[in-house]
Length: 564
Image 1 (tube, one colour):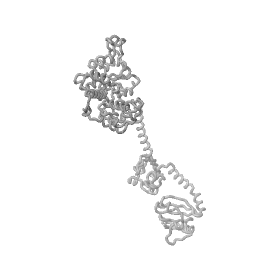
Image 2 (cartoon, rainbow, N blue to C red):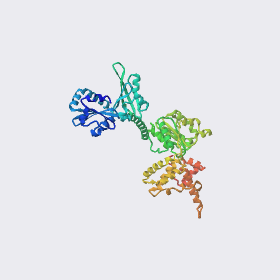
Image 3 (cartoon, rainbow, N blue to C red):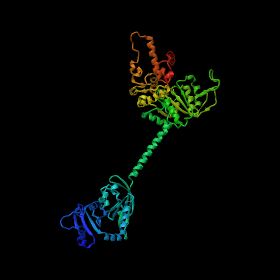
Image 4 (cartoon, one colour):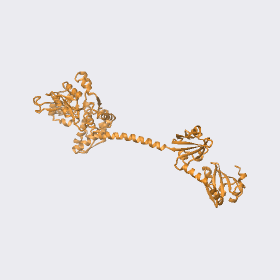
């Protein structure tokens, strides 16, 4: 065995060879003398040398120094995982060997330190790619124990997917150093620097690979990029929230898109055209655009084209000179267009603008200048225009009641606000906002039951946000309890449309009941309208009739309309 039988008894130290089970395969005479034993029978190292570490050395493929009495033991793994050897040196012989081999030991220690100092994976292979040495980071990085790695072929490990691609294979084939990325079987990512070592005759001797695990660095880089992306998103959201008008309350995706579009166009002076049903909050959106724009510190001037009589709307919008007509202000009047200089002019209910005024408005939109009534000199203004209506202007253009050229001048950036029935997820947030607002305004702090919120979400709000707002205010003012419950809601919420009329009973005061019904009908129409003119159209009567009835029944119109 390894020619030990021939030379074993000629060396001045003891030799014993054991396998992984501890069975002794060979002992020379010096070993028999040191251990005071013989070669007869099958023996195990645990019996004659209790507490020894040779089996561990064989498993781990190590070289370990230990002692036994006054003898120094060199535990050596001959074949990792299979066979090992113990050399027994008396102290005097060991000291002499150490003094002669100190340079070798120093070199070995330096090599071990270099390979294991920085925690990187270091492998040394021969010219055929067989692994000779590996640093102790092998198991941590590759998931393979050192003794299972040593003696293996690097190209074969690439084929088996232990690590790929093989830097050793590249160096052997190309005879030059390489830096490349590698991936281990466990999915870790490495950057490896492979260096060829040549003999004096120029042939390849060994290959040294130094690999750095960059998995965590790449993960951190990815996390950093994701964090930066999230940070950018929230910074953008923060900028929007800082600019956001607090009256703009929404949760739905539909209103989110409306608000995002408003944000995008706020700082450009393009004319915005807002369309939506009565009560959806067109003025709120117009004010939001103004407050998000660079004109936010300048005036926001609103003119309700439906609320001003046709006979005076031109003078209200463009102003007039001194003494222009009887009954006018003796000093003349500055029009709303000039009042909005450097700011925003909001033309609400633009569809109600008389045809004779539309031509003059077109000039204002195109040229940013106009001529006040009674004057000949043009007045220039710097104004941003926002128009709004609930009417179909395209149909009005076809009917000849609205100028086509004005329509296209207004229809630059169209924004449609969906009715409340199409964004019911906004209702709880609107209710909460209105409840808090009116509780503070009237110093009557109320809470609202979950059942009421659920009922509101199922209810058909024909008057949209305005009707919801009016309802919340009425509940804050009229409900005596602090907590508003479902039974506190007015009866109209629970009656179908066909039942919302007076039921005939005994001793009915016909005139009084008719008047009460008429009053409720007018209130309902006013709640869902921007103006008396609009309410009169819904009821099919003249505006003068509505005005007369409002006075007769002492209806507080101002309290019914909050989002004009």
